Length: 126
Image (cartoon, rainbow, N blue to C red; front, side, top):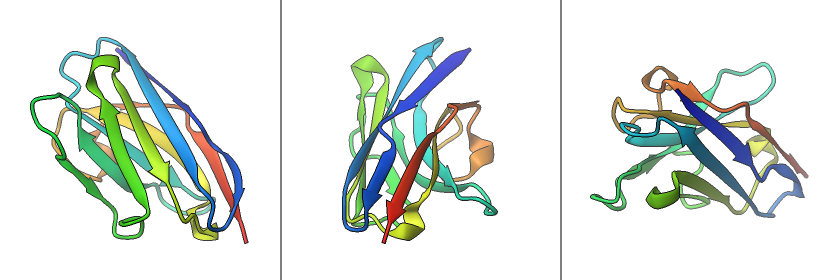
């Protein structure tokens, strides 16, 4: 089993920044991909960004179109940590943000990920 714990959520005004972090623990061998998803009230969960975790490849990652140029995903392979730097935040970024981990490829589809954190709330006011 893999446990994922997110941190770093909060409330900011539009244009502000937040940095989310996710630490994986437990049986982390074989976890090749970690991702961030978000879900706003009344909406489906959507993929935000995903990254290949092992150090063998760098910059193997992808983003949702809605966050390209504003969000940056990064990883610390040695510490099984993935971060999401969120800049130029907009009210529409308001959601619960979830960390996910799996080994089924670089994708922003929720069914590709086996393990999930409990989420951290991000609220952006106008």
